[in-house]
Length: 255
Image (cartoon, rainbow, N blue to C red; front, top):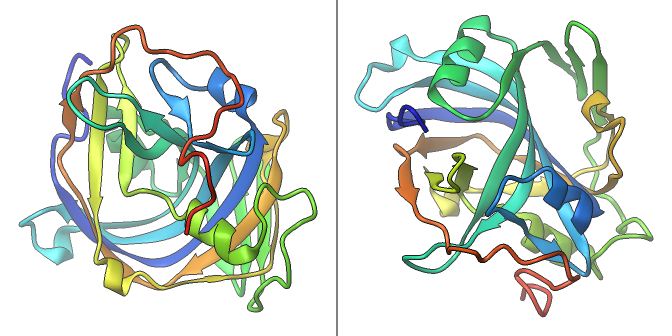
């Protein structure tokens, strides 16, 4: 990295949020990940996390709230793990693409982060989500009732198991060309994290050429966030195992 990415600790709130999760073959996920990142897997599946959220008054820590920036953000992230030389592996999310409705945020985001920002018109109204870019349209409809069961192809045995496993670890992870990790720790009050499963249907243009199937969607109540200044970690040298069907988080479902 020529410059330190995520150089500032940022604070703000997420006051509207939906998380759509999808399974994909482990090998497909691995092809999208730079070394040494590995997909978090369960029973041979890797997983996408698509967030649709409204960020309220994001600003550098210590800056008055009135100077913060508010915007809608849609991001396509893979659940990943990063083997480190100095300690246990780190699990979190790798941003493949981000879309937001602020040109200023997209420009600043591409300078300050590796989250791959693009501008889009994002409209949320009565559970209908529309995302329009220069050459694509995506949409989703979110209900108010919980699903009665998992889809028949799900990697999980029941809804609670899926929800526990797919609650992402609070780290954003990117790497440079040498495999050095840029780790953003997300600080949130876990006692204030309240999420509920909801019925949802979505068509994301980003997934048009990808092998994905929906798992669950959940809605998260408003919550304050702090995105810490990134720190760097070194990878385990030459530890880039081939896809073998092994599990991460790993040999048994979460309890």
